[in-house]
Image 1 (cartoon, rainbow over the protein chains, first blue to last red):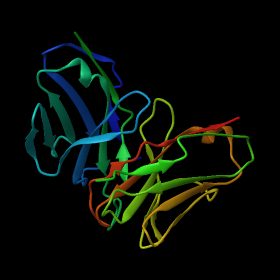
Image 2 (spheres, helix red, strand yellow):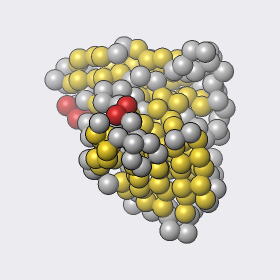
Image 3 (cartoon, each protein chain N blue to C red):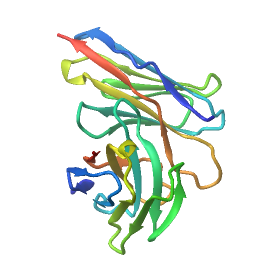
Image 4 (cartoon, rainbow over the protein chains, first blue to last red):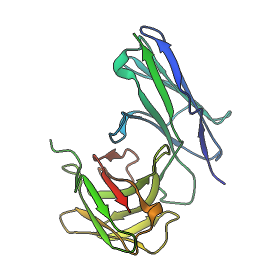
Length: 114
Length: 113
């Protein structure tokens, strides 16, 4: 069973701290990784994507990918109460040529405490 | 720049009925994917349309069918509704077929009673 796994949380961090969200995936051949933010009652919003090993930074967000360990993470620096949401990790699993379907984890609920 | 739009926002149906949900992709996007998100779960892939054809399909029964129109908009049809079909139905669009980044619409909340 090809899977994407996340700790469901909730993860609570104080305002201004670094929030670290983690995700593991089962398919070693996966090439594309995404982080979506979903506020309660809303749809997922794409905030980061990463395709190569290493770090990718965009403002307060850093995505980290380690394909050897099948691990992808999202760091949120200077966390704000407005960052409180569920963060979904998504992977395009290697399920054959031309596969573009996203496989999602269940999400990690982040709460930033003022 | 118009984002992905979906209609209706909310829908209540009775078990056994049929439902049609609609999606217009982001301006300039030609590929549409549909996902089902049950409460507390991540979205699950239903199918993807490009050039008016179903290109990929997830693990959903034939009760779920779709269509894409020449203007790239899309419909999701679900027949013989079950209570378990109650979920948030999400449409996502991509710039071109094969583009990895997908952008979601606001979703349609379907409740089956």
